[in-house]
Length: 96
Length: 488
Image (cartoon, rainbow over all chains, first blue to last red; front, top):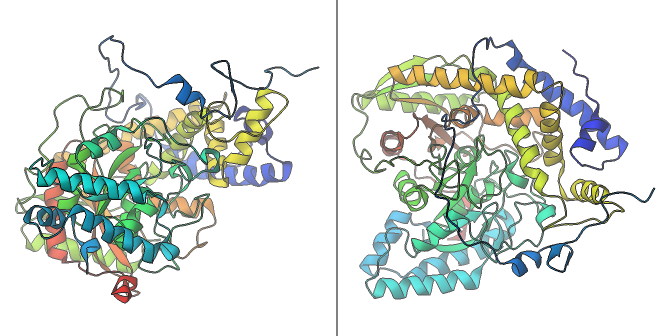
């Protein structure tokens, strides 16, 4: 079954700024992998529940107590850009 | 043979008999690394001064009678996807170049508490995605048995370090076989514990429902010793096993008499090298002679496990790796807007295989495809788990080759799908959440090591170790890489 992939859309969703020629190579590689992976669709899973946890755990609760955290200045010292105790980034919206 | 070639068990005994000190062991391992690293490149970072300092501290404690157990004073390598406070931790990616975590992973804390000496950070496929360590952004690791061949992956640096004597043991992580396959290809023991029994806190996440940290060692006894040092409930990991933990040594010397061992019939035939198939047959004959009953078991859904895995793992990877966005740590490539900065940073910082898997996972999770791909893969996972559970009603453990092939040459599997097939025997245990171990049993005609895999039900590590130790004893595997013979 040939698989149709809008690779530019997928790359945008994944926040990957890739040139057109690389996207085309990736599109054909993904199509080949997905054709192989599509074999799972042949399995009869009528009435089967998905395994979202390998051992079937549902929830893990802990005591609602305050525990220590990382030092803010040390964490911010790792950031590409920090200002006034915050991570700093370019504007979220363009100029237009 | 020198101190760098000792098992953890023998090294620990020698520390207590006064045969050597932790400083002797650590210097031996560092000296070995200085001889082998130019060719092997098992490590991304070696923390020489810290290792020597930890060794001196261990010696002082042992001299004062403060004995922390088997790992006290033992030089251990960490795969570089485990956070160690203040030590560069890159997951072999450019996007984390220069990153020095402000905290220790729980396994690192556990090893420190056990008195282990942390030698350095071992190479891996970028973000643990690969089966050859060729995907490291900092250059591949070479196999000590033949430097023209890969060590396997993704924990190739950890396995090569243990094989070459630049660590006495190492931690790896296993998402689809990344401890067991390099163990097999490097002639060492690689073990994936039951999902949730070793904390993932501080492990740089690849696929959270599959990832598990485990030991890479020279012997099964060492595997037990290293696992004992890191296993246990951790409230910082919400998927951590909160129930009882078994005594890992309780069945280690019980042998296999009366055990029922299932051979998975699907793991044979096309793509399996004859020497690999023959090694498994010989091992099964030996186990039969030792009193085990060998039965053939068919698990038809394992044929689909690879397909399910290559939907589930990339889907989880695409979500986990969203955190690498140029905001808080690691690489940033500037842009006019936040989104442009993120998209440029990620395109430049991630290598080709990581990008491929992020796109694959993003597609599998995207609107209109979710049910057909990701949802269906998780249902296949349920069917597979049920098949394993039914098999374990009839047998105690299951066996297969660890890898269909021995170590392959560099660039031999440039087609991504061909590389993925390397993990066909190991992936099912990750999907099921069960423990599995690879034990070296022999060499192929080219002198390359071959491992066999033992799989067991969840939390059945004690029995699995007992079978593995019997296999080890019957195989009598004591070969060493030729490059080490030449050093002597």
